[in-house]
Length: 491
Image: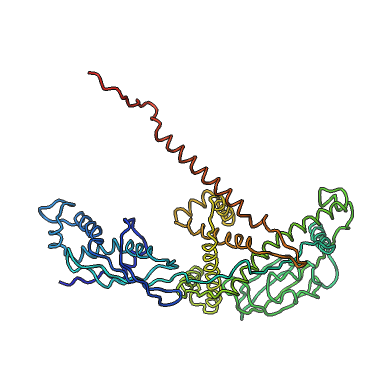
């Protein structure tokens, strides 16, 4: 009798959650369908499938009620008669399929980027003979060829500090200690205006604010607001059209009415010794200027590292053709739009698709780079990253890490650290020069091979010490127990 293969959906569900099975040998062949998609054809002999079949018999025996037999003690031949071989083999395939897929994958150099689509094409028709055959189509990381890093040229800005740099820094400090003073004149760029604002679409008022302070030129409210307020005096009102920047009507054009209730300018303190004492721990203006010069130099040095990393990434993307798996992009776009309840927003879909394509392309490139450079992530680097990430989410580090562990997300976090570190390790192989032609030392920001080796040695030593301590603890008799005697017992 021919037994139909298990439903495809049931098989696919099993494939998402691998069982812990002993590694087995399976016959598999790989066919490349696209640069980012392959088809695995897998054959599993009956002997290799038998542990899953035995488990199926055991599980079914515990579930069925058959007169004359206790639960869990029903023989396989009775199960075949009463329940049917079809139920047994379906259970066995569903139970073992994910493990067979994993083992077949382990025989290749493929790096899956998504869940596979599995199709069972053949199953044993009866106990004792036949094979399980299935195919698995899965999107994988494409093979890309990276350039010789030593041949890459990168140029960053010089860290030379100019008087203009110090003046700009000084002006920013003066802004912090300035005072707002009301003025009786039309508003100009840089002025602070207290406004009342109302937005109307048709006959419906969709938004309004009152008593809000806004600096002309900041551009952080509505498109066209800066132009509307420029030239407006206290007590005057004007109207303009603008697309709304948020809320239920985001993107829709509205008629906006804005009234200036007051106009103020920021008066800045004089640059002298008194200001130095007010704004810093220094007594004189010269000391303050020297400190600002040092701050600017530090910022420029740090910016060199950031610029070099960005420039390297841009250079690699220009040099390397990175195929992007469309299915992975579509899945990410769907997840993003669904979380925003905007699945029907085609314009936003196009924006999210562009962003997702770029992000996945970058990930593929950096994963390949990390693999090529044999990047290792230390426990300290991972913990540092997780602590920083926890702050962004406003969570305690221990709570954040526990949440990630429960969700099985720690490996993904290791991947994030490895990608970031890959760029730093790559920069160690490149001579980065500034605009004056000087070689730039970025070791403070990208580390060194010696530091990595020292950290790895330290990690190994700590692991060995912990292992030795655990062994010693396991060999120490528990408190209150008596040690075993080598003497024979006396009657």
